[in-house]
Amino acid sequence: MPTARRSHRIFEVLDRRQPDLTVVAEDVYKPHNLSAMLRSCDAVGIGTVHAVRPTGGVPTYEATSASAEKWVHLEVHRAIDGALDALRADGMQLLAAHLSDDAVDYRDVDYVRPTAIIFGNERSGVTEHTASRADAHVIIPMLGMVQSLNVSVATAVILFEAQRQRREAGRYDTPALPAKVRSDQAFRWLYPDRAAELDASGVPLPWLTRDGDIVADDTVPDWAR
Image (cartoon, rainbow, N blue to C red; front, side, top):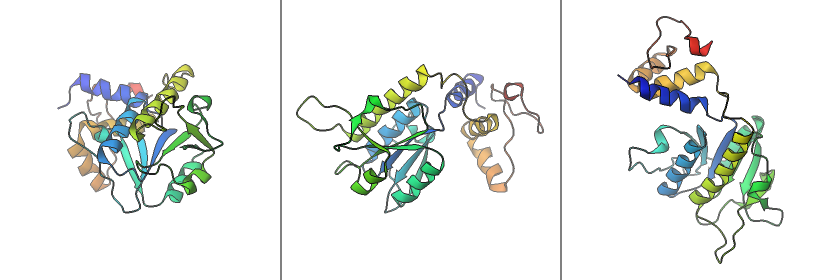
């Protein structure tokens, strides 16, 4: 049985999730880099990350119990255009971390807007085709001899600027996810085996109290009213 303390912690995390902020990893093929990117996403309240891998599945590195893979949903796409089309249809601006003549300092864009930030792979970065589809290009100014940071480090740098802007705008003060979505996700994290059985049967998940107790019948708990 989950403890009330763990349940409260999970609900606090879900209360701060930012469904209109996400990352697109374009063919990032090194597991430790993708895992580090997911950890940074979790740290700033991103619950879903998009990975484009033309060959199919995406490897991630799960060597520690603190691995972010269990807390961040990784949606894998085979083609970049489908991923970008879906994000744009959701009203997101598309920003590519890409060095170009039109690139701007990453701190000079508005991340309070619904935003998807695209990062390219370790070898060649964001492809030219993907860069051409972005609304803007952002760069991290480099004052030394090297031209760029490791992709996972660059992800963290840019995301924490997004977090700073969103905190100042009060975006973490009020839950953005609907109450039922938060309750269902908490149920899946706290009762994974039972959630899998109910999902397989097509049965809706029951509501939870913030202590992690299952609410009888279809009663809505006070916190969700």
